[in-house]
Length: 114
Image (cartoon, rainbow, N blue to C red; front, side):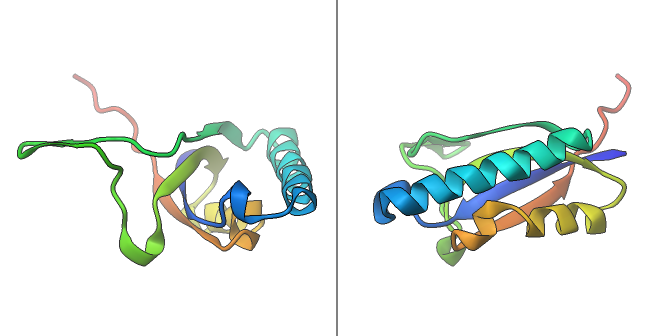
């Protein structure tokens, strides 16, 4: 199986939802992550703290990259799948989608020999 990075963009923040909605979302995340774990498809991932910095040849900005309507990356998952299409099927079940977010999927390339 290959590994894929799922970048979780956008979505409604916790503060914009009721306690009941947040509890339901936490339960959905538990079920989703449990399912990935049972099938040995979870390789890592965590939510990200708001804010950040961008470093480039032009200097340093004290803000994360915002891809316009796509939203700021709020977390990531690394999953295992046989193809990018299979990774997309796994991503469709992610609770982030029902939280008005979107997910960018990128295959993780193996490190070339040095």
